[in-house]
Length: 235
Ligand SMILES: Nc1nc2c(ncn2[C@@H]2O[C@H](COP(=O)(O)OP(=O)(O)OP(=O)(O)O)[C@@H](O)[C@H]2O)c(=O)[nH]1
Ligand SMILES: [Mg+2]
Image 1: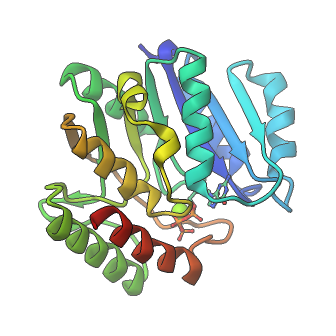
Image 2: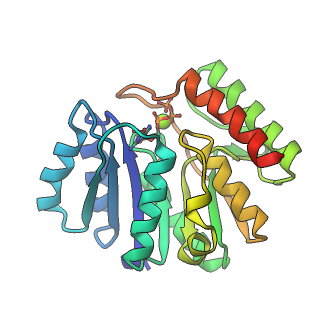
Image 3: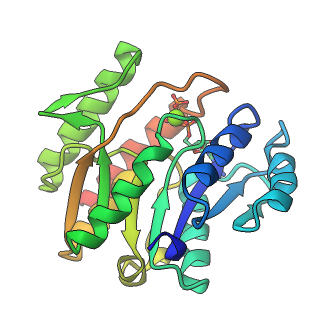
Protein backbone atom coordinates (compact mmCIF):
# COMPACT_ATOMS: atom_id res chain seq x y z
CA UNK A 1 0.00 0.00 0.00
CA UNK A 2 2.63 2.54 1.05
CA UNK A 3 4.74 1.84 -2.02
CA UNK A 4 1.85 3.20 -4.09
CA UNK A 5 1.60 6.29 -1.89
CA UNK A 6 3.04 9.75 -2.42
CA UNK A 7 3.33 12.50 0.18
CA UNK A 8 3.41 16.01 -1.31
CA UNK A 9 5.00 18.76 0.78
CA UNK A 10 5.06 22.39 -0.43
CA UNK A 11 7.90 24.41 1.07
CA UNK A 12 8.78 28.05 1.36
CA UNK A 13 11.59 28.92 3.78
CA UNK A 14 11.42 25.65 5.69
CA UNK A 15 15.17 25.05 6.02
CA UNK A 16 14.79 24.62 9.78
CA UNK A 17 12.17 21.88 9.39
CA UNK A 18 12.68 20.10 6.07
CA UNK A 19 15.50 17.72 6.91
CA UNK A 20 14.07 16.65 10.25
CA UNK A 21 10.65 16.07 8.75
CA UNK A 22 11.90 14.02 5.80
CA UNK A 23 14.15 11.91 8.01
CA UNK A 24 11.18 11.19 10.27
CA UNK A 25 8.93 10.25 7.34
CA UNK A 26 11.47 7.85 5.78
CA UNK A 27 12.33 6.36 9.18
CA UNK A 28 8.65 5.53 9.73
CA UNK A 29 7.85 4.51 6.14
CA UNK A 30 10.92 3.52 4.08
CA UNK A 31 8.73 2.41 1.17
CA UNK A 32 6.79 5.67 0.75
CA UNK A 33 7.57 8.33 -1.91
CA UNK A 34 7.79 12.04 -1.15
CA UNK A 35 7.62 15.03 -3.48
CA UNK A 36 8.76 18.43 -2.20
CA UNK A 37 7.67 21.49 -4.16
CA UNK A 38 9.84 24.44 -3.29
CA UNK A 39 9.29 27.97 -4.58
CA UNK A 40 12.94 29.00 -4.78
CA UNK A 41 13.04 29.64 -1.03
CA UNK A 42 15.45 32.45 -0.11
CA UNK A 43 16.71 30.22 2.76
CA UNK A 44 17.61 27.57 0.13
CA UNK A 45 15.32 24.82 1.44
CA UNK A 46 15.63 23.24 -2.03
CA UNK A 47 19.36 22.80 -1.51
CA UNK A 48 18.72 20.63 1.56
CA UNK A 49 16.32 18.49 -0.48
CA UNK A 50 18.83 18.14 -3.33
CA UNK A 51 21.36 16.72 -0.86
CA UNK A 52 18.83 14.44 0.88
CA UNK A 53 17.88 12.95 -2.50
CA UNK A 54 21.21 11.06 -2.49
CA UNK A 55 20.24 9.39 0.77
CA UNK A 56 16.57 8.81 -0.08
CA UNK A 57 15.95 7.59 -3.66
CA UNK A 58 12.19 7.91 -3.13
CA UNK A 59 12.49 11.64 -2.56
CA UNK A 60 11.79 14.01 -5.48
CA UNK A 61 11.96 17.77 -5.84
CA UNK A 62 10.20 20.25 -8.06
CA UNK A 63 11.82 23.66 -7.78
CA UNK A 64 9.74 26.52 -9.11
CA UNK A 65 10.90 30.03 -10.02
CA UNK A 66 9.35 31.96 -7.15
CA UNK A 67 6.65 32.10 -4.48
CA UNK A 68 3.41 31.25 -6.19
CA UNK A 69 1.22 29.96 -3.37
CA UNK A 70 0.72 26.54 -1.85
CA UNK A 71 -2.42 25.99 -3.95
CA UNK A 72 -0.60 26.13 -7.27
CA UNK A 73 2.21 24.02 -5.76
CA UNK A 74 -0.27 21.28 -4.86
CA UNK A 75 -1.92 21.37 -8.29
CA UNK A 76 1.51 20.83 -9.85
CA UNK A 77 2.19 18.03 -7.37
CA UNK A 78 -1.16 16.35 -8.07
CA UNK A 79 -0.46 16.33 -11.81
CA UNK A 80 2.97 14.86 -11.16
CA UNK A 81 1.41 12.17 -8.94
CA UNK A 82 -1.10 11.22 -11.65
CA UNK A 83 1.63 11.04 -14.30
CA UNK A 84 3.68 8.76 -12.02
CA UNK A 85 0.64 6.51 -11.39
CA UNK A 86 0.48 6.83 -7.60
CA UNK A 87 -2.72 5.46 -6.06
CA UNK A 88 -2.82 7.35 -2.77
CA UNK A 89 -1.78 10.98 -2.57
CA UNK A 90 -1.20 12.63 0.81
CA UNK A 91 -0.64 16.36 1.30
CA UNK A 92 1.00 17.80 4.39
CA UNK A 93 2.78 20.90 5.73
CA UNK A 94 6.51 20.99 6.36
CA UNK A 95 6.37 22.75 9.73
CA UNK A 96 5.62 19.75 12.02
CA UNK A 97 2.05 20.96 12.51
CA UNK A 98 1.17 17.59 11.03
CA UNK A 99 2.57 14.46 12.66
CA UNK A 100 4.12 11.98 10.19
CA UNK A 101 2.74 9.18 12.41
CA UNK A 102 -0.75 10.06 11.13
CA UNK A 103 0.14 9.48 7.45
CA UNK A 104 -0.57 5.76 7.62
CA UNK A 105 -3.92 6.29 9.28
CA UNK A 106 -5.06 8.65 6.51
CA UNK A 107 -4.09 6.20 3.76
CA UNK A 108 -5.53 3.16 5.54
CA UNK A 109 -8.84 4.91 6.19
CA UNK A 110 -9.10 5.87 2.52
CA UNK A 111 -8.52 2.28 1.51
CA UNK A 112 -10.51 0.46 4.21
CA UNK A 113 -13.55 2.73 4.03
CA UNK A 114 -13.39 3.03 0.26
CA UNK A 115 -13.33 6.82 0.54
CA UNK A 116 -12.47 9.32 -2.18
CA UNK A 117 -10.93 11.85 0.20
CA UNK A 118 -9.85 11.56 3.84
CA UNK A 119 -9.43 14.77 5.82
CA UNK A 120 -7.25 14.88 8.92
CA UNK A 121 -9.49 16.81 11.29
CA UNK A 122 -8.23 19.14 13.98
CA UNK A 123 -11.57 18.78 15.75
CA UNK A 124 -12.38 16.21 18.37
CA UNK A 125 -15.92 15.91 19.75
CA UNK A 126 -16.77 19.20 17.99
CA UNK A 127 -13.91 21.10 19.64
CA UNK A 128 -10.85 22.45 17.89
CA UNK A 129 -7.86 20.71 19.49
CA UNK A 130 -4.68 22.66 18.85
CA UNK A 131 -1.87 22.94 21.35
CA UNK A 132 -0.45 26.43 21.96
CA UNK A 133 -2.30 28.12 19.14
CA UNK A 134 -2.84 31.84 19.46
CA UNK A 135 -6.46 32.73 20.16
CA UNK A 136 -6.85 34.82 16.96
CA UNK A 137 -5.79 31.83 14.83
CA UNK A 138 -8.32 29.63 16.62
CA UNK A 139 -11.08 32.18 16.10
CA UNK A 140 -10.14 32.57 12.42
CA UNK A 141 -10.19 28.81 11.85
CA UNK A 142 -13.41 28.09 13.72
CA UNK A 143 -15.22 31.04 12.08
CA UNK A 144 -13.97 30.09 8.61
CA UNK A 145 -15.16 26.49 8.94
CA UNK A 146 -18.48 27.60 10.43
CA UNK A 147 -19.17 30.06 7.61
CA UNK A 148 -18.04 27.69 4.90
CA UNK A 149 -20.18 24.90 6.38
CA UNK A 150 -23.34 26.94 6.61
CA UNK A 151 -23.01 28.68 3.23
CA UNK A 152 -21.97 25.69 1.17
CA UNK A 153 -23.73 22.81 2.88
CA UNK A 154 -20.51 20.81 3.17
CA UNK A 155 -21.16 18.97 6.42
CA UNK A 156 -17.59 18.52 7.63
CA UNK A 157 -15.98 19.96 10.74
CA UNK A 158 -12.51 20.85 9.50
CA UNK A 159 -12.84 22.52 6.13
CA UNK A 160 -9.49 24.33 6.04
CA UNK A 161 -7.01 21.75 7.34
CA UNK A 162 -4.05 20.78 5.17
CA UNK A 163 -3.40 17.13 6.09
CA UNK A 164 -5.40 15.00 3.68
CA UNK A 165 -5.30 11.91 1.51
CA UNK A 166 -6.80 11.71 -2.01
CA UNK A 167 -7.53 8.65 -4.05
CA UNK A 168 -5.94 9.08 -7.49
CA UNK A 169 -9.37 8.59 -9.10
CA UNK A 170 -10.61 11.63 -7.18
CA UNK A 171 -7.83 13.79 -8.58
CA UNK A 172 -8.58 12.47 -12.07
CA UNK A 173 -12.23 13.48 -11.74
CA UNK A 174 -11.50 16.91 -10.26
CA UNK A 175 -10.34 18.90 -13.30
CA UNK A 176 -7.29 20.36 -11.61
CA UNK A 177 -7.01 23.20 -14.12
CA UNK A 178 -10.23 24.71 -12.77
CA UNK A 179 -8.77 25.26 -9.29
CA UNK A 180 -8.43 29.00 -8.67
CA UNK A 181 -7.03 29.29 -5.12
CA UNK A 182 -3.41 30.14 -4.51
CA UNK A 183 -3.30 30.44 -0.71
CA UNK A 184 -4.73 28.45 2.17
CA UNK A 185 -8.33 28.63 0.89
CA UNK A 186 -7.11 25.97 -1.57
CA UNK A 187 -7.77 23.52 1.27
CA UNK A 188 -11.44 24.41 1.22
CA UNK A 189 -11.73 24.65 -2.55
CA UNK A 190 -10.57 21.07 -3.05
CA UNK A 191 -13.00 19.80 -0.38
CA UNK A 192 -15.79 21.77 -2.02
CA UNK A 193 -15.02 20.40 -5.49
CA UNK A 194 -14.89 16.81 -4.22
CA UNK A 195 -18.19 17.38 -2.41
CA UNK A 196 -19.77 18.86 -5.58
CA UNK A 197 -18.77 15.71 -7.46
CA UNK A 198 -20.80 13.69 -4.93
CA UNK A 199 -17.75 11.75 -3.78
CA UNK A 200 -17.18 10.18 -0.36
CA UNK A 201 -15.30 12.34 2.17
CA UNK A 202 -14.35 11.04 5.63
CA UNK A 203 -12.79 12.95 8.53
CA UNK A 204 -10.41 11.34 11.00
CA UNK A 205 -8.98 13.09 14.07
CA UNK A 206 -5.28 13.95 13.84
CA UNK A 207 -2.92 15.61 16.25
CA UNK A 208 -2.09 19.17 15.25
CA UNK A 209 0.60 21.40 16.72
CA UNK A 210 1.58 25.00 16.40
CA UNK A 211 4.66 25.59 14.25
CA UNK A 212 7.81 25.84 16.43
CA UNK A 213 10.57 26.62 13.91
CA UNK A 214 10.43 28.98 10.93
CA UNK A 215 7.96 31.72 10.07
CA UNK A 216 4.30 31.59 9.17
CA UNK A 217 3.29 32.40 5.59
CA UNK A 218 -0.17 33.47 6.66
CA UNK A 219 -0.77 37.06 5.51
CA UNK A 220 -3.54 39.59 5.04
CA UNK A 221 -3.34 38.99 1.29
CA UNK A 222 -3.98 35.27 1.81
CA UNK A 223 -6.96 36.00 4.10
CA UNK A 224 -8.44 38.48 1.58
CA UNK A 225 -8.00 35.97 -1.23
CA UNK A 226 -10.01 33.48 0.87
CA UNK A 227 -12.96 35.84 1.09
CA UNK A 228 -12.92 36.50 -2.68
CA UNK A 229 -12.65 32.79 -3.54
CA UNK A 230 -15.44 31.93 -1.13
CA UNK A 231 -17.84 34.27 -2.98
CA UNK A 232 -16.62 33.08 -6.38
CA UNK A 233 -17.27 29.45 -5.50
CA UNK A 234 -20.56 30.10 -3.79
CA UNK A 235 -22.14 32.39 -6.39
N1 LIG B 1 5.85 25.95 -2.48
C1 LIG B 1 5.20 26.78 -1.64
N2 LIG B 1 4.95 26.39 -0.38
C2 LIG B 1 4.31 27.25 0.45
C3 LIG B 1 3.89 28.54 0.04
N3 LIG B 1 3.28 29.13 1.10
C4 LIG B 1 3.32 28.25 2.12
N4 LIG B 1 3.94 27.11 1.74
C5 LIG B 1 4.15 25.89 2.52
O1 LIG B 1 2.86 25.38 2.84
C6 LIG B 1 2.85 24.83 4.15
C7 LIG B 1 1.83 25.57 5.02
O2 LIG B 1 2.26 26.92 5.21
P1 LIG B 1 2.35 27.61 6.67
O3 LIG B 1 3.23 28.78 6.59
O4 LIG B 1 2.69 26.58 7.70
O5 LIG B 1 0.89 28.13 6.83
P2 LIG B 1 0.00 28.00 8.09
O6 LIG B 1 0.04 26.59 8.60
O7 LIG B 1 -1.31 28.55 7.70
O8 LIG B 1 0.72 29.00 9.10
P3 LIG B 1 1.60 28.69 10.41
O9 LIG B 1 1.58 27.25 10.69
O10 LIG B 1 1.02 29.54 11.45
O11 LIG B 1 2.99 29.10 10.08
C8 LIG B 1 4.28 24.94 4.67
O12 LIG B 1 4.95 23.74 4.40
C9 LIG B 1 4.84 26.09 3.86
O13 LIG B 1 6.24 26.06 3.72
C10 LIG B 1 4.18 28.93 -1.31
O14 LIG B 1 3.87 30.03 -1.77
N5 LIG B 1 4.82 28.02 -2.10
MG1 LIG C 1 1.71 25.74 9.37
